[in-house]
Image (cartoon, rainbow, N blue to C red):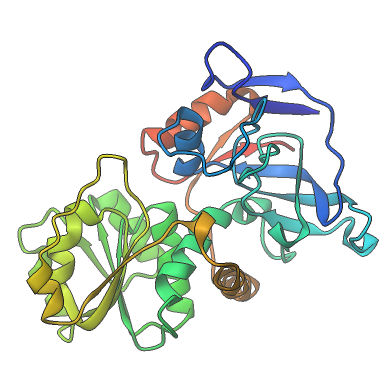
Length: 328
């Protein structure tokens, strides 16, 4: 099979496309013929060593990309053959494993290949994984979302987009999104945000308070180091601020007394270390929304496998929309 790899040349971060032996699924695994591979910030960060690998054994080479979609074409000895031919979306394909989705085939644990409804495109399936499950956990780790006011920072990003749609599906009381410009504001409105605020506006706090006078209950926070003051200023009593992204240089100055008085909670999460039960809950919530037709894709930026380096660069440079590798 053809696959993109890194880690097997003089430059360990260099992406190359080469021929590899097609992997076979072992016990508990399925093989997926990949249709679309999704590209996320975690993929280029892992490749470049910006984020430290948390697996114990270095790989001779690595096929990148955690997310994707396609069709199961082979199963391990203990997996029902009835799954062959099933359309699926794939999560965490490259987590502690060699076979990411930037290849014609990937092998994953059977529980990480989730049925993809016929009404959902492969592009949408490849847009789930890291973004949708991160969004779902941030929104619901502290209980049901119904009637809760939610603020989603970075409302036009992949996680933000999924969080808006999931929050609306789960009947949040009011969904606020913050963005940096009008193009992104339109994407957030299209996803279903009821209030969209440019966080650079001098009166951003006043705009949010005007839309939600009782304050925000749940925060899905992409840049805590930049946004903590705004978050605290618009938070309701007992609110939870969940931070899901950071660079190695991210440092937030925590105003302890301002958090104590309204009994606020700062929560931090990394999808790869979310407890198994909560990960399954996030998968179930995402599947329910997907089946109901409540999830959509951002504008698609499509690349071929030979353009894998350009695809990673596009994500690193902040492309607005979803970057995918089309393997069909």
